[in-house]
Length: 362
Image (cartoon, rainbow, N blue to C red; front, side, top):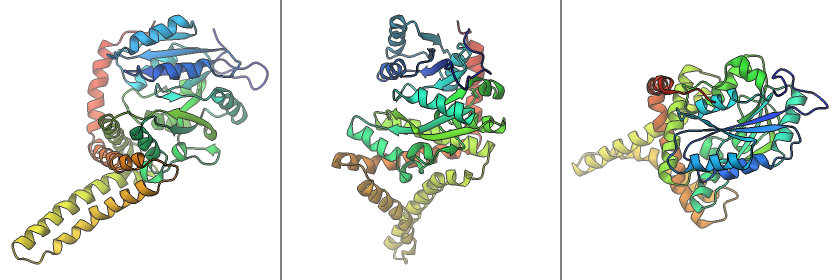
């Protein structure tokens, strides 16, 4: 047995750490993610729990090989396949008082755990996290990374662009005290995206601090293709709509900007086309003025693509002209059905199906 969940040492003996990682069809990235855990400079005891979903790309075979190569790495079946289900399965299968959430697309710097545990000890926070440092290896991925780290891309929240150390609403990934997680009931398995934000909401309601520190930067590998990026952001937008409806907060209004932009651009284009029809029929084409709405959006995207700092390649800037609208429109279109209850209805059906087929972790 590891140190009791409620006995995180404040000095002397370092608390044990459990890394929990949900994996599904991530054969390209998971080895680098696991290697970054084994290469931490943290001197306390640790183990790694990989909850692997029903993958078809060789992920299962790879993580089994990683487990055979290092006894500290344990593979657990995640029959549901979702991220929150995998995280909960891995958390329940481990015992150390500190839990480090890891994404298969992420690479932790070697000092990540040491800095996070020091921050927990210093602040007493229930969760500590930092910045998602998106980095690409192709021009397309570099464009996605640039969009992630810009205000015009994802809105400029601290866990994307940085900020001052202190209490926060949410952070990227997270290093948790097990007792805080246990108190609030772990991840909500009905929420497929945005589960970090929702969990951090409950952690704060439970009287714990969610602490942001820019010292924690985690390399994140973006989706490698436009189709996968589109699916990711449609799903993200749908779940943000669901969460915005269920848990309205003081900054909820900013989440309505993408769907309102989508509606405005669509209506402006349609009304402008009607104006062209007016002109063809000999009427005053005043409705063509509606084209000003999509025109302003196009100019905004072009301006951002040409001026975002840190982008040195013309190919990356060209991809930004496509990537930015993909993120905006997929997120905005997804938000609308999510806000109209569709996300929760779909998730409830899948959750019940998963509960009926779930097997207990070993």
